[in-house]
Length: 220
Image (cartoon, rainbow, N blue to C red):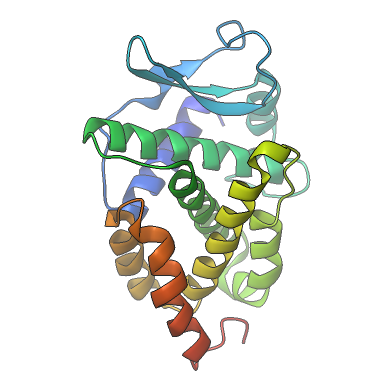
């Protein structure tokens, strides 16, 4: 699938998941390998031009080529699972930051990472359901959640913040898996509207009580 089509497909799904719209054509914000700063060694990321107040979205040529050759909307597996996870998460970061900047709302690294992790899991779970059926996803949610959210990070400077984001994302995703589709859509829209200080507290205080006392088991 051409990159432009994949971007549009996933962008629409992310914005629909949370009930917001940036009105942006993400294709116009893509940054090529020739344009990225010297020494930038990530396969994908959101770049900020502070002078122009403009965001950029970078995907390496290798990542894009892999997703074009191994279309994740047709098959998700060993060849494209990791790259598609990165693709979704960085696109979510871009859309999340674009919305925050346009509304002049403050945000934190932790909030951005939590949001990206939650989106990544919800998106991949949805595409797996589309490709394999919901019954398969329900039986394998724990394994899928672990594969998507329990990634290892090599940067010691950021490891604590990544670990906290991962902890909160896993906790919230566990709770979301106990909801039916209608409840989940309502909950995600509510969560998205919380500010940077409220999101972590909401997960630990409100969601914590709810999922510990819940009678429904997401793995049954």
